Image 1 (cartoon, rainbow, N blue to C red):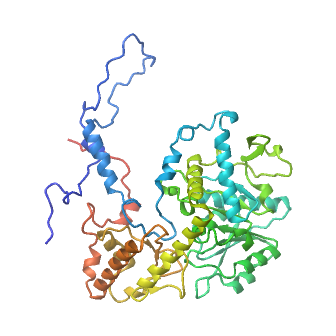
Image 2 (tube, rainbow, N blue to C red; image 1 turned 180 degrees about the vertical axis):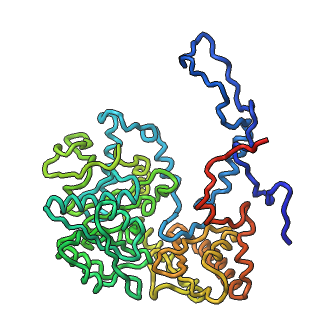
Image 3 (tube, rainbow, N blue to C red; image 1 turned 135 degrees about the horizontal axis):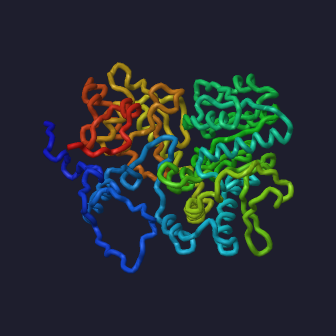
Length: 498
């Protein structure tokens, strides 16, 4: 039996009005006395109407934001199975260190002599990234993974320009992250797509056929977006180098191989590292991101400024191109030098785990993904044969003739208390379901998620498609018209007219 309550609440899942809807004129949580003995400096430009902000008491404000926080599904609340996003636990130790006095209160405009500890911390974080990747140079500036891609491709363009070569074609596998071709285009390159083989990897023959003297390089993700390791990656690197191009690697999935494979040994020239995926700093979409880029010897001279160097007994932030011989930076990416809070969290994670701990983390990520794959493969249709790396990919073949779509299944998962997996990506797989458990999930939590998925699959197979079409049932908001929401978004609250 279903029913609607008078309040719109569902037990303790409360219907929360907008803060503007709750406000009342003249209501406030604090009273401030009129200032005495001061003159107005507004020059006659005093406001003659209300500010238009809501008036609430202190308890109302506390309740409002507490209720909003309870509506957010986060990694602290439960299993986050998004594939290609790596939403894993951020140890509280990281947060504690980032809030220490002397770190939390830094200002980017402080004199260099007063931030020697901060510069040394950046240098140490860079050192860890260089050791783990085997590369000789790193830029810490990029503010996120996508800007890291931009950084790598701009360095490649600068290197080609320095050679006097007008190479403008970039090869991009069809399973690439969408930002890859977008970044290449933004840098003035044309994008040439490479098809995949039946086992989900780059078609080596098709890749070789596309090589030519106009090829600037390749943008390849490894492990790729299908959750698979590119077996021919070394061959691909050799071929693109023989053709005079560079190898850019999308390092979004470095968390699957860190401590086990060094990108330098694969022939990579540039690779961005998402600190929020591999080294546990908060995800870029939820706050400041960080996407350092490591470079090979060939591209190191073109890395952007600024960068940290050690001189004598202190550290120095190089801000201009002529300060270091042999460097030809393409410019700078942002106003200051990266995201300090993310560097602190990442370095804390690396030092607390150590080399052996990082190696175990990547191994556990792959183990968890393959356990999930083994639990689901008999009922869900696996996109590609064999073992996976850090994420398991399924297509919608198991839903054929049920009348249930990938989207319907995802909506029903919400009622089971889980955030849905990544849907319809990568695009090379029809009705894709991409699931990444990460190394931070226990066997019990993965089993609970798998049991929920299998129960929903059984329900779909029973012919109850109508149940899925109306899911979710237990959320404050039911299924939205997502097309209308995208085309006609309501972005501004307007008070009801009398």
